[in-house]
Image (cartoon, rainbow, N blue to C red; front, top):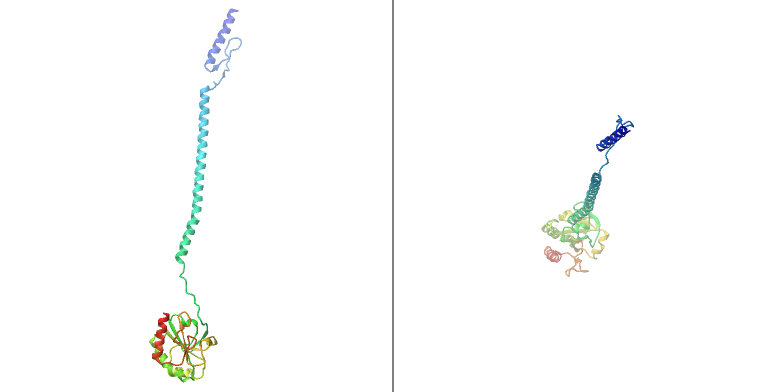
Length: 258
């Protein structure tokens, strides 16, 4: 009996010692060691568990900060892109406005002549209109007829004045206007006229009197020149004049309108 109790106590002691090493060997009822031991994993201590949980929490926190930083960078990139898109149209608009101011054309003087017409120049064989007044400070328009002695008599003086003023290339110009075709070509040939000679049209009715020759003056804008020197309506000169008389009138009116 005592021997059996001693065996049991010895087995129990051995089991306790082995358990402390992390391996428990189970003995059978006869005190013999079981050949199939069971390994028991030791539980982690409270300190170790806390450390692991702390590491995991820190890892999660780092991941959260990283994600937040990434989102912040992405948001910043979007903001920069938005700023670029916003500024670009403004800059382009400013450039367009500056270009518009630079390229703006100079304001042109309105062409509003007192007389509009369309007719034919028999000397230069071309169609003409009221723009014939452009490019000259003053233009003398002399109405004549081939059957009128005083008209034909002053034409050589008008030709001389025309040549003195640059034959239409200077500040002054002379234009003849006639209404009767018969003998007109002959007279022009005999006189040797080179200044423009136009066929009369109805739009010119406002420029004539009941007498020929009569003369009217225009400025470069196509406006009638009015003067106290005129014989009728403040702008119609009636009758023929000499070269010197016409030159004096031309010089006076030129100074008035230049």
